[in-house]
Image (cartoon, rainbow over all chains, first blue to last red; front, side, top):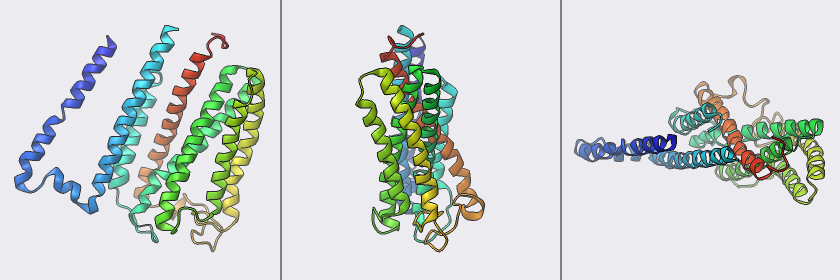
Length: 76
Length: 227
């Protein structure tokens, strides 16, 4: 039950930001877009994006392992 | 999930570190330029290692007092995560050094001492692997772990400060000159606002990783542990 809610929350969280990409495409004509931000300041934000991506996946993986261990602990 | 709030705090602090660490305005110091931002990633990881190895020491002492195999598992896993942090620290330090000190390994006293410290803790893992008798393994490795900690601290905290070092906090007159490295005016106020949350984040992350391995290990040794 809790797992199903967790899955649903993850799903909602993952797709609730998909509109941001649409916005980025639409505002391309006005000149300020994600693209220009990413290229500013010697492209430092690219490094930030890479690090944040790694961090997101790392934490999702750790939470997953943690939940699996918790489940095993309960079954013992 | 156990200790959920600690883990959420860890995630928040790490995301804060990885965003503010790139966005905060940093001062220009020497030839560091933007690489001074490594201060939010390389240094707090070493802080995390010190905490992990201190916890390992505490559980080794607890094992010798109570002879509970659970404490031995705690000590071993904290030390192993500490080794991982140490290897990462040496690797990231080498990358940073390549572009600031001119070469990945300049035989800096702190570099050498940190490498020796990692080797001492690797010997701890080898020692554990060499014994089949679980009680004997726990006792001998607990004694070794206490010895290892009390050579580890002088190696990374005291010896590099007695000689000239490229790291900050070396003897006066060296490139990095001045001791200590982190207090007073030697670190920018804005950087301090990111640095200390980063330290807490890295410490909790290290404990979290160790906690996962400890729980797995306890599960697989369930027949040996009472309750």
